[in-house]
Image 1: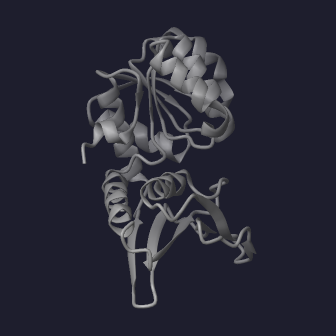
Image 2: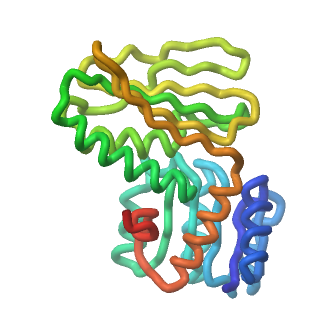
Image 3: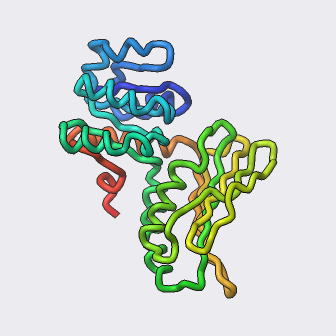
Length: 251
């Protein structure tokens, strides 16, 4: 398979290594300094582009790839609020393909399935309140993480007593804590911590007077995310439309 890379930071380099090890060809690498390469024959020859950039660039990158007939796999977050409807129309009505996930880790896919099932169980036990904490490296600009938002949205969907999630407490790299919101009874708090070089930790806790239940996913490195992105690209090669990890992993 011919792969183009959009974004060539730590994730881009790791994706390149894994893709080559699985026998794929990297035909184009686009980063901040060579945006004109979107118009190159090399980029247009790609079967799939794997995009890991930032919330402000992602949507534009999708449009430029789609204009060349290139399918996209993306792990960029933050664009959904303003562009979700446009992307759905482009994929469902105009024939383009985007595989998007807030997290491509196989472990996170399994963790997400457990999270949904646990929320369904807990819907029948209102004595348990729920909260989430996510920890990431100091370079991560957004909070809460895209993965946390996806996990929280799944909980809200299955838990009748919660209508929405809110950002609770933000712990900055210097240890300073900022209380963004105090959750109401119908709100679920998501606390964010920015610390050292942590690849990503997500913990969900159901707490009652009698006991508490916590499930946690702790990433040891970014390698699991990179492998998942390549697996998604392999899946996307033969599929079309707006795709997610639920299409790839049938849990």
